[in-house]
Image 1 (cartoon, rainbow, N blue to C red):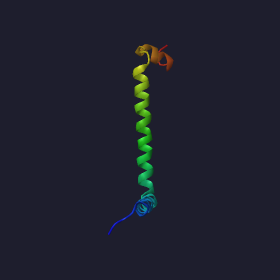
Image 2 (image 1 turned 60 degrees about the horizontal axis):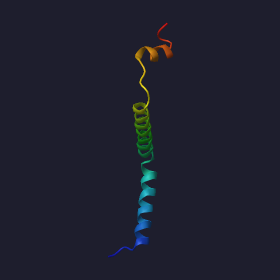
Image 3 (image 1 turned 30 degrees about the vertical axis):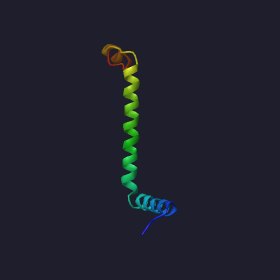
Image 4 (image 1 turned 180 degrees about the vertical axis):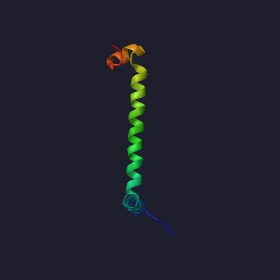
Length: 66
């Protein structure tokens, strides 16, 4: 039995559709975590490229120090 490209494409689409319907919550959780990880990685890269500040400067901005 052989499957041509159009049949394969159709089968893959159907499988993905079934997966999204049956595992909606798991996929939502997965993509939510993926987006959070990507945002964290971006923040880390931006932080590494930015100028360093002292602990006192950070705490002063947070109004922890007088």
